[in-house]
Amino acid sequence: MQSNISEKLEMKFPPIVLLKSDEKPENAVGPKKSGGCAMSFVAQTIAKRKTTYFGRENISCGGISAGFGWGSGLADEDAEDFQAAFLSNGVDSATDKEEYLSKIENMPKPTREMFHHGERIYCDFETAKTCIKNRPIYDEGEYVIFKGLENLKEGEIPQSVIFTVNPIELTVLIQINSSFRLEDNYILTPQASSCQSIGCFTFKEAESDNPKPVLGPIDFAGRAKTKHFIPNDYLTLSMPWELFLKLEELSKDSVLETDLWKNFI
Image (cartoon, rainbow, N blue to C red; front, side, top):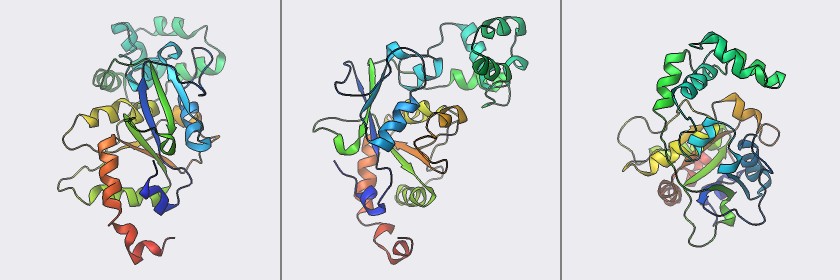
């Protein structure tokens, strides 16, 4: 399948799709063991058009478990507290500083230092823990598969369609997405990891009668894994399949057909 929006914009990075599966895909690139960040594989699909995958057996953090719909990834309250401290101010946010330090003391030095200072996505422990508890949680499928939209097979229905856009391309998508809406808040920007924005937060929108696109990535940990493939001035805009199809149809009689747009080509 081809995207009219992508063709009209002559996008450097045409859209990709996320599919859930119980079977590991053949002839696809994936991790050889557990650990690592899935966003490096997503970036290869975006930039190199390779089909990639990530599986439950490759999970390395609670964030990715929630992100791709494999449960919360957090076994108990202590695990939630540890992640809330890490996502805020690290050891300074930990409810039990000695225990927190003992958990990170054997990590490789760069990782240990990151956990010591915290990722600082949230301003404090309480905010982090509340947001962790409010994540959309799903638990199905063994693998997520990423492929270019052009490689989508007949009958396959993606759980997420992901545009990778520069500021002008984002402006066009915002305008098309806003062209049929009557209320405010046309796009979501959850305080979430990269995998969660293209994953569980987009999955949640598929359940809505009025789904919205999700803008990301806003976490620098995720961006660090994609910057070798994707320039820093690009963002992702992910959306459920049905919303993608609607925007594609609207794009055929949109701002892309005007002289105003032609001034930017």
